[in-house]
Length: 325
Image 1: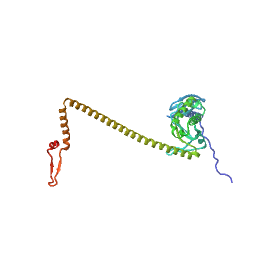
Image 2 (image 1 turned 90 degrees about the vertical axis):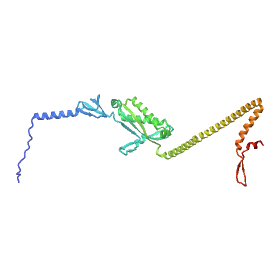
Image 3 (image 1 turned 135 degrees about the horizontal axis):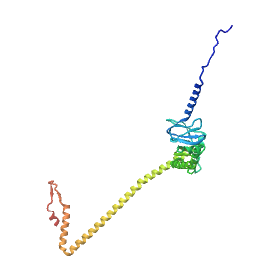
Image 4 (image 1 turned 45 degrees about the vertical axis):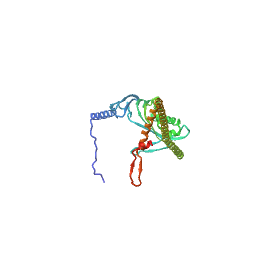
């Protein structure tokens, strides 16, 4: 049986050589344009390498460079706040950030204190890249070098303090000391990093000794509480006793001064009366008698006689005559 289908022939359209040349030229120009323009973000600095050698830096915005690998762009985030974590890693950031601990992070966190105890120290460092040239070209792998610097500095600071200072009272001072020393190392090795903050996140004893350490802390806290209560009672009782003693002393001094002054006044009055008596004895005796009567009479102003029969109250008026009798 023979095939009755007609044969099909495909013929490509004829393209003029000029069109092909123009198309190739347009593609080459497009590639050159795409490779020549680049954008630097607002938080970044562009570092241009020409055949692998540092050429220049560019500020944020749209710029041109030589294409086809002649010039290469590296963007460095100089305005961005960067963070390095030690002793833990952030596994998922969000409203409730989740952290993870691995064998590597445990090695970072375990440190020997000055009193030969072991502490698990977790900390973070916030930093910025202040010099892109030094950060890229002065030291190989600056991020790893910066992490090694952190471990060396923090281990040195922890090793100079006791475990009580590391876990409780000395954390802020140690963090400030470690930050300053870390910045000195960065300046010395010209790594181009500015350390903004070093914070100890969590400092604990190792898990096997945590119960004993907690018991010791509870005992120390109980001791501190009792000492504070004793000082509080002391500060209340001692000032009150001192005030009462001072009040008693001042009262005794006032009483003594009043008695002395009264005695001196009586003595001076007696001397004055005696002086007058020597000059005129009769007149002085009469005056003394009248003064005594004037002092006694008001005290016996009325003498009351109760009459059982008449139930009357009879004032005695002639008191002067009765006194004379």
